[in-house]
Image (cartoon, rainbow, N blue to C red; front, side, top):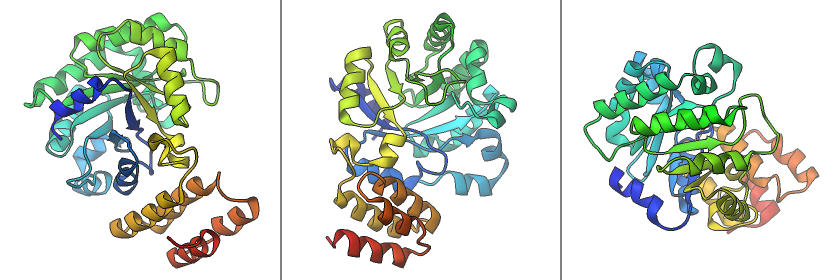
Length: 306
């Protein structure tokens, strides 16, 4: 899929379905799984651009993809335009866009000048977006940002309008401030931002089912929805399943084996996927398993085979 097709996704008359960047979790194998179940676009986990440029080892471990892993957006943490543009040039042949993280609220990120603190530096963000735009030859290559909101929403609208003028392709809005964790998402704020821009806006925060997708779409008029924990719990969510179908569990076994997914990651995904479809005693046993063969045996004996 080339970048031209990526923007066409926004013209299909339904919200684009996006898998969020998730540390440790939105890796290649999991992206393959959600793509089987109607996910339109996937993000890599957040990659620190400076580390990525500093070491070949970092590049190999942080960024793996294959021919079928498209459309793909590579998300970077960066705080200067030059480093972000350099990193974008490295990944652009293997992806459909880069996204600048302006929303990560974790203390380490903010103290390093990454993530959510960037929403208070609109001129810098604008400069970073423009720099990537200028460095990449392909005009269809997407340059996007993912933000949280300010307490004073006028600041958020101002930031968004500035980066829109700098040529950003779309903006993903997590409808919480940097201080908020499990508070309800401010969908009204997302609507205000959507109404003040002409580029696509993607809503993020607490989207756990297709009913949520519909409700958020109705409330905000956004062009896309991005899910994180909702997809971890149910990778088939975008295909309309209320809870993880067993077929999806078996698909994960196949994909994880094919990709040589390390046991801990393989197991963690299953812990999330089985949480809503298993009993407490089953979970206690399952969560303590420590080998792939034990996991496979447990699944076959508990859920029957294919």
